[in-house]
Amino acid sequence: MASLLYVSLCVLVSAILSDTPSAQAYRIWLPRNASAHEGGSFMQVHLHRDNETGSKRFEGSSPYVKMQYHMGPVLTSSIRVYIIWYGTWKSSQKAIIRDFLHSLSGPVSKRRPTVGAWWNTVQLYTDQTGANISKSVVLAGEVYDHYSHGKILSRMTVQEVIRDSIRNGSLKVDSCGGLYMVLTSEDVQMQDFCRAVCGFHYFTFPSIVGYTLPYAWIGNSALQCPEYCAYPFKVPSYMIGFEPLKPPNRDVGVDGMVSVIGHELAELSSNPLINAWYAGNDPTAPTEIADLCEGIYGTGGGGSYMGSVSVDTYGASFNLHGIKRRKYLVQWIWNPIVNYCTGSNFMG
Ligand SMILES: *[C@@H]1O[C@H](CO)[C@@H](O)[C@H](O)[C@H]1NC(C)=O
Ligand SMILES: *[C@@H]1O[C@H](CO)[C@@H](O)[C@H](O)[C@H]1NC(C)=O
Ligand SMILES: *[C@@H]1O[C@H](CO)[C@@H](O)[C@H](O)[C@H]1NC(C)=O
Ligand SMILES: *[C@@H]1O[C@H](CO)[C@@H](O)[C@H](O)[C@H]1NC(C)=O
Image 1 (cartoon, protein in one colour):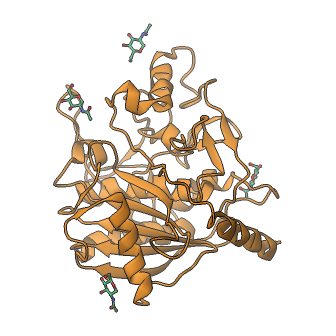
Image 2 (cartoon, protein in one colour):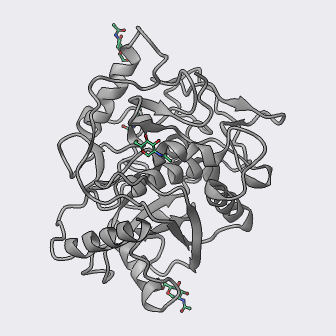
Image 3 (cartoon, rainbow, N blue to C red):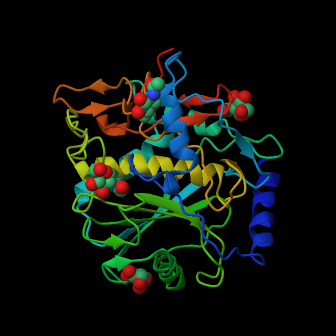
């Protein structure tokens, strides 16, 4: 069974080679007060939730949300993540992110709720054959890129960054379960970073990279816009009365990135070629499984309330335990069975 599905994803990947869309659908991670024009269906969901006084039991529930399967592949065979550390990264920062990835399907922490159980919501998504998204997510490779394309990147140069590491053999081509993540350090600017995105995902173009590979970019926002991209560890000034929370790994930018990495991983796995799971009728602006739950980290979350999360002895907020006694605060994911957002710290 597994090998059949493995083949089918690869067939679909090669089928799309001849039909590369010209418009890129970026994963837009919107700040809360983005304009209605930019926000589209996303803001509608939030407004609805704010005004839904009846029941907050179903976090993020909305009759307007129709998460639909568009027949494309999802990642049903073992998921292998390849990281490109772009720019300058401290070893403490890399450790926070590596430990998060190793917690997804690594040794199970004795403390609950776990990072691994958080992935259970993503596993509920299936492909045409009924096969679920893989339980196995491993960090399969890492490369360093010391500003090969400078300190200002665009959506296209990110693909060149991936291409260059593939060309010189430091990254392998893994088109059946491989996900490529370009992580940029706090001094690297990205087109639309802060203004509209904290991270995005798409797939690489054969004309640039030579292959169609699902990839994501996530930036460290610490020096640029932590109040949007590392929220709630920094809070925008217009949110009067909201105190920022303490980050569980003492690093505002990287702790903020971890939730965005979780967001992008969930969407890359359920919509790797932008033709599988999303809501809305516009494939150039799909509302995907993590978009619907942005800002929700615990039971009761919705509107500007993040939901019920834990606080450790140092006063840091978290909702997941990982390996090596790590703690993380990661947003919830849309659950297609119950039609609301869930996470492993769900309290029924
Ligand atoms: C959000 O709202 C504040 C205050 O109204 C404004 O200064 C800021 O530019 C807005 N941000 C975006 C991304 O629209
Ligand atoms: C609905 O939500 C909006 C945005 O939060 C708010 O301004 C408005 O007052 C709410 N309306 C009702 C009836 O609660
Ligand atoms: C696989 O997906 C189906 C449909 O969403 C769900 O009922 C089932 O529990 C999932 N299996 C696992 C192991 O998550
Ligand atoms: C491969 O290319 C990348 C991107 O240009 C570069 O950062 C890296 O150092 C190169 N690796 C080798 C082994 O040449």
